[in-house]
Amino acid sequence: MVVNGWRLFAHRLFTQQLERLTSQVEALAAKDPEDYRNQPATKLLATIRRYIMEIIPKDPNAAEFRQGNTLGPDNRHWFRAKFHDRYRLFYRFSSHDKLIIYAWVNDEDSLRKAGSRTDPYAIFRNMLVSGSPPSSLDQLLRVSKEMPQTDTGFVSRPQEGKTKREARRKT
Image (cartoon, rainbow, N blue to C red; front, top):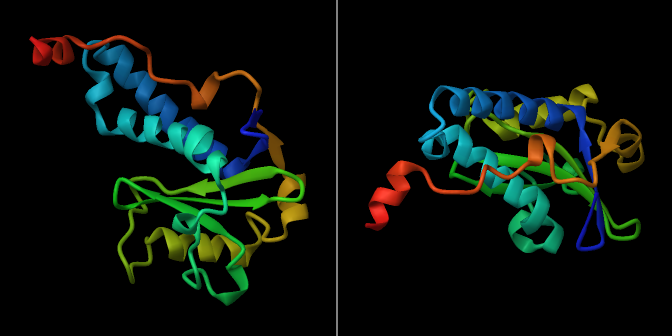
């Protein structure tokens, strides 16, 4: 998939997290089609979609995405987006090759809490030490898949239209 001239790729760790979240949202939609869009999981999925499809591809090198030495000085080439206060989405990009590779996003079991062993920075740093995902851009690209050109699957938009609750608020 190409967005703003950037080819988008996803590592399996990122894809797995999004597939879990998508399944959760689909179950919510099946259980309560009128109100599932108001659920935290649905809002989180919509936010992740907006970041990977719109915000990050506008400027993956933006200062707001730089993480400094949080992952250690050897990992300053990793970038992260912060949203919903305690979520982090980690990625690499190459300006030369015009590509972005989304590596991992934390879930509700690894919310941001400085100093905690379940902090997303601690978890991702340990992932890098173990080699999954690989830190080298070339190796990361080899084990990642290009995101499909169509806007379907785990990056699909929540269905358009208003819930009954949203419609009532407007009147």
